Image (cartoon, rainbow, N blue to C red; front, side, top):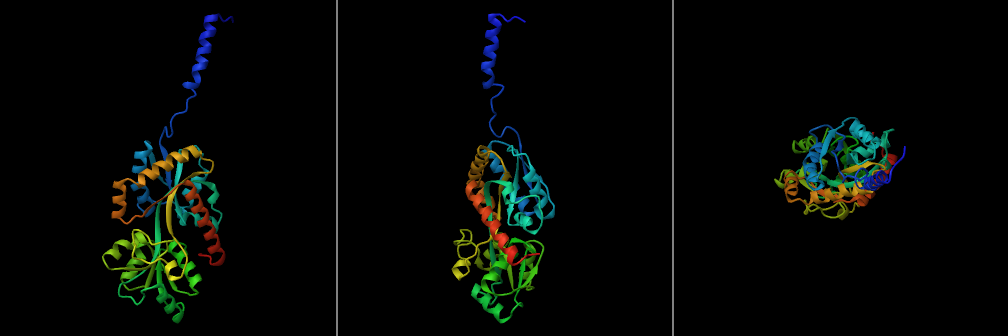
Length: 320
């Protein structure tokens, strides 16, 4: 077929225009992002996600669909996150240490290295609490009583292998004591047991105790943060009392390994802006949900450090 000069010119012009049209990259995100929450609807993780997501959408200028994939204590959803296509349109809500415990217990289908860290959003510090009329006013009081009554001082937690239980194991090891651990199902049950006089102490989360501490029905005698926590400034840290350990539950966003750094940066920025939104801050404060932002490198370091600590606890004191 012969091509005349006019046809050739038209073809060349079309080819030159193609990169600016057919091959142009749409701004990210150009379609809804699926956010896998590896726990059932209605739980603390799910409620946190659904509270924060609308504010991330506001600054992302995109849509995020929350998808619950419960099973095996977070393992099912986390494995699905890890195996997702790293195209930026499937991300996950990560719980530390709960979800990251599973690879230490058994073959889970993922490890900490299966994920691309995006940003942390919530950090609920662990606390040691008792009743205001208790004889325990400090950690030293607990240690002294535990040495006087080995294995007799009762303490409740959110369950075997929960972050509060793991923090308790670390405290026992460092203090050289053995408490009588009574596991419950979730954070509310051990608090109820404490208030009912069924246990002497509770290893809990700040979010589960804060409202009760403010109304004077619970006394928090130690918090596992590096420095005093802004939401509970009168509670002394474990480190202040001679036990340099930190602990709590972190909740953040991850993508599958291989996700584009540019896409990570877009979501990371939206999360940072969301957590500074006055409306979200008020809502979170009202329910004692501690919003704590970590950028991608900080969150990645936190995940790796937490994984190393879990490995050490599993090696010395297996939780199951």
